[in-house]
Length: 429
Image (tube, rainbow, N blue to C red; front, side, top):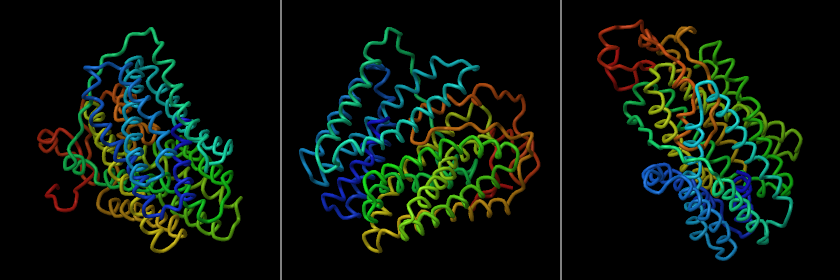
């Protein structure tokens, strides 16, 4: 994760140094998320035949090699292909690790493992930014260092004496069925993917364009990631005590406000204010991922949760592909200031949609809400199996409420899953 976090910002900074237009850089950075999507689909199909250790070794070697190609061929097409390869490789690496963790987890340790996994993932990404200051991003040393870091990850996996776990690929709910269950969950998850892809794909480019030093760029990206780690649990605890839609709406609105404050601070050159605003932005933006999953799970039986979470993660991944494309084009056409302005508008749009859904249907009773579980953003689909709610929440009866209606036993028997209220264009009561 340290190597992945370092490479993420390094490629963006180096693209600016090489004179790539923001629109072209957007295409390059979005290729990672496209590769990640392919990796999430393909890796489970080969794991059963090849085995965990071999798959991990092959994909880590692939990611390590790709990191060296950037300095050999300074070309946006080649760089886009390498980002595609890197995304594919890391999606597979995550799935291997997550399935191994899930195999070792018990009902008592599942939540703890998930929390540690999330901290390692996001903490590693944040710590990787520090190494931007070790050498000149305009040279080749940092790309070699990325390759070394990813290669080192092979050692504990290759030397493990533990037997590899059995792996069963989780299924995904179809988008239509997922949207029927929770329109707000699907829309929020897709929008969060667009925003996250745009921010982490283009943040280094934005920082370079407004004149930040490499040290300042590494600081502000690190702060945004750590803000998300720190505020995940407080936001989650509030969502367990109040209407989850209300907390989701407040959180996304606060994130939009923080983005506007970051825009102002960046344009005025107040770096301390900028760091504070970016930390708040990350702190309120990152938890939306877990909030959307928890909110959707409120309307599901445990045996549906893994499939629903996998579907939501897929939706989030599709959204992430478009984030850098959209922001890159806007930055080329309008200027760097559109970076945080567009992110703010996107967050506010999620909040408005949440308000609309709140007007359409009444809240689920607090006693029927499941617990919030903090989930790592941009993890593999197998992370859904680590959610302790899928194992520990045992409810003999289906939830008695859909959002806005009292329970209808005949309708429950027909659908076997609850939704968060009627979606536009449906005939749901």
